[in-house]
Length: 132
Image 1 (tube, helix red, strand yellow):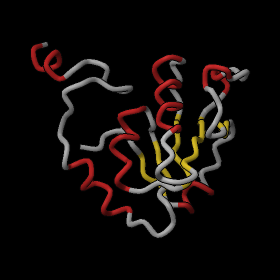
Image 2 (cartoon, rainbow, N blue to C red):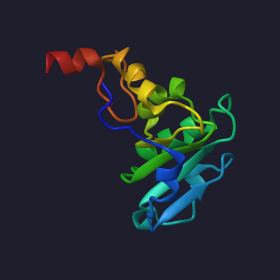
Image 3 (tube, helix red, strand yellow):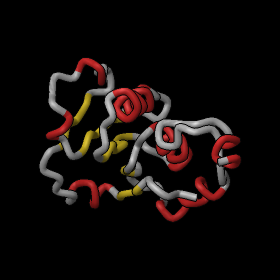
Image 4 (cartoon, helix red, strand yellow):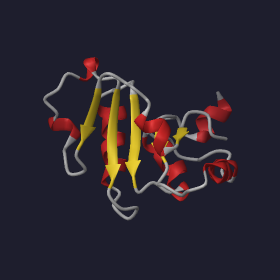
């Protein structure tokens, strides 16, 4: 079930008003950022088209390697089919592409109740969580 990924419309994204937002280009290396992430509230990562998955790697690096705790937002060509993987790689919010029905998004999360392997958010594999 979707517990952490916040799904936004284009209008909600524009009106968000977060003061300290870093827009990271799709081809940028998060490990080479020269900005103090402690001062950043949100990082926007762009999907120029749904087949370009570099932002997944960027989000994973920001969460796991750099320990970024703020909002990592997916923007651009974001479709509901991508939302589960976005959440697993570290995104905390996503702006759906114009015309995509947000009410259908929850079905994506309902299809998968758990994952065997760990991910950017839940690092412990399922078998270890169940035996703990």
